[in-house]
Length: 329
Image 1 (cartoon, helix red, strand yellow):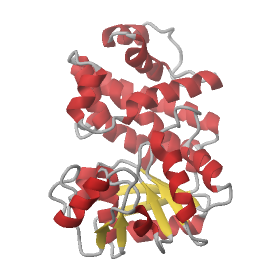
Image 2 (cartoon, rainbow, N blue to C red):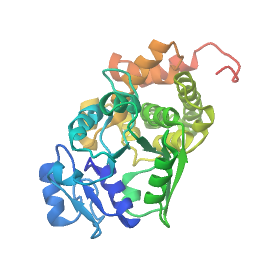
Image 3 (spheres, rainbow, N blue to C red):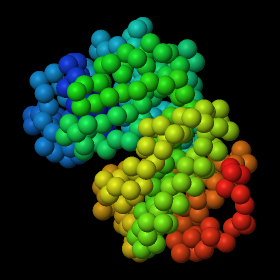
Image 4 (cartoon, rainbow, N blue to C red):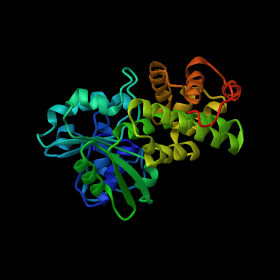
C-alpha cells in the first residue's frame, strides 16, 4: 500500500483483516511511518485503529515494494503520476497496480488509467477501487461495499476476493472510465451540496442538486466512453449521495465552511486533509468545456471557487436557466 493517509491506512487495514500480509509505505510520510512502526496505528489520520500483526509500516519505499505482486496506490490525483513514476523501477515482472485515487489530472485532464498507461505502459495490469466509503468507518470495521474495476477480469476478481470479509463486500466491473468519472465529479458536487446546506436552503434543494448532479456526471461519463448503468451503482450514485450528505465528507465540509464565510485556505486549514473537490471542480470544468458538455452545477461550483461568485448568486443562476424537459439530458 503506497499512501499512508487516512484512506490508504484504512484499505491496508481491510486487506490485513481479510488475512493478507500488507506493507504500508509512502513517498513523503517518512516520519509518520516511523511513528506507525512504534505505535502500531496511524495516530494522525486514523487514531484508534490498531494494526494487526500482518500489517507492517515501512518507512523505506524499497522495503515496502520488495517482492510485492499487488501494489495499491492511495494518493491524491495530483500526486498519482509522480508516485507511479517513482515506483516503476521497483516493480517486478508479475506486479499489478491498482489505485484508490479519484480525480482528473489537473495539468492534462486525463483520468488515472490514462496516466497509468503513459507511465507504466498500455499493457500493464491495472485496476481502480472506488465507491461510497469513508476511511474512518472502514478503519473501524463497519459494514462497507465498494467497486473494483479493471479491463483484466481476473485481476478485478482477485482483488475483490482479497479485500472482502464478513463486513466488507467488493463488486467487480469492467467499466474503468465510469468508475473513475464517478469518483472525480462527485467531489465537486459535494462542495456544492455543502454550500447549499450551509446557506439553509433545505432538503428540497439538496436532493435537486444531487439528482441533477448525477445527470451531469452521467452526461460527462458517457461522452468519455463510460457505460450509463455504472452511474446507478456504488461508484456513481452511491458515492455521490454519501459524499454530499454526510459530514465525514471533507468536500461537504469545505462547502459548509465556504457558506459560513470562510476562505478556501481557512477551510483547508480547519479540515487538515486534502479536499479533492477544489481541484476537481477546475479539472472537471475544463474537461467539460473542451468536450462541449453542459454541466451547470459543476460550472457554478467552479465559479464560486475560482471566479469570486457568491453561493447565493450561483443558486440564482441555476434557478433562472431556461426551462426544458427533464428527459433532455
